[in-house]
Amino acid sequence: MWNEWFLGAVGLACGGIAAAGLATFITSIGVVSRLAQVTRTACHINRYENIFFLGCVAGNLYSLYVWPLPLGKPALGLSGLFVGVFLGCMIGGIAEVLNAIPVFFHRTRLRLGLKALVWAIALGKVAGGIFDFLIAP
Image 1 (cartoon, one colour):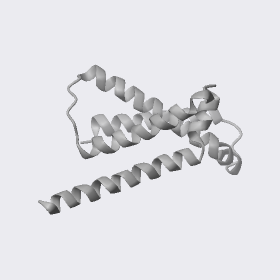
Image 2 (cartoon, rainbow, N blue to C red):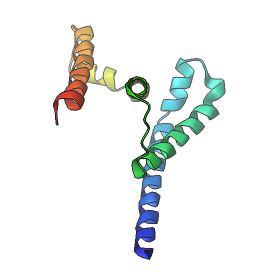
Image 3 (cartoon, rainbow, N blue to C red):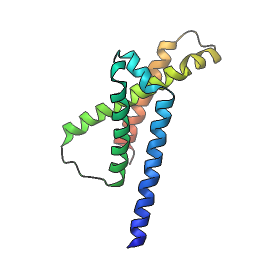
Image 4 (cartoon, rainbow, N blue to C red):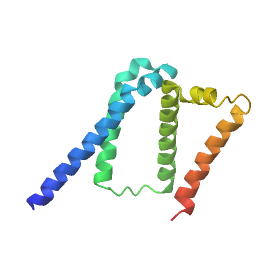
């Protein structure tokens, strides 16, 4: 019995360290503060960081104790929408903070077709997600 308690405590501690590392990484590169500037809600930056941290903790607990949430397909679609908005904002914030897209375009000397390239990347992500969730076993 003590072995199970010990393994549970180690697993919870490792998950907490991973969640704290993710929160620290995203906060340190300025994604949260940059999104607050873009949306003109910088006065709520403490709330954003607290909610982000609580989301990391909640995700850690959910992955540890998978709770059944019988809310139906509409709630599943709504949660998918929220996750997609979050990931889009996070990826956009990281790309803006790190200037990844302009550096990529400059290094590849890409001048024409930027709009088509961005659409191709977006549609590829959508097609990959659909394949992963609906088609692949």
